Image 1 (tube, rainbow, N blue to C red):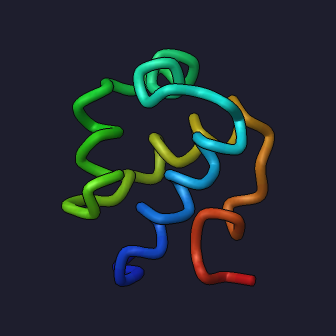
Image 2: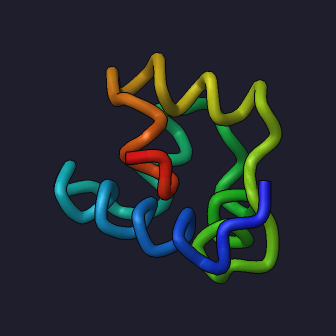
Amino acid sequence: MANNGVFSERLKALIETLGLKQGEFAEMASIDQGTVSTWLSGKAEPKYSQLQKIISTFHINPARLFEWE
């Protein structure tokens, strides 16, 4: 799912748009805060199951997080 940092930048923007802190975002999505931190640093990307949690928790189109648009 390599995207050259697109995911991390778009996730940062989403968290900011939602007015949340990283820890709040992680808690709401039931994802470990360390995992979210790794995504934000661009060191890793979410597994499908984690992406599903983000999509369903925040009711967003996955294209918003990737260059699928």
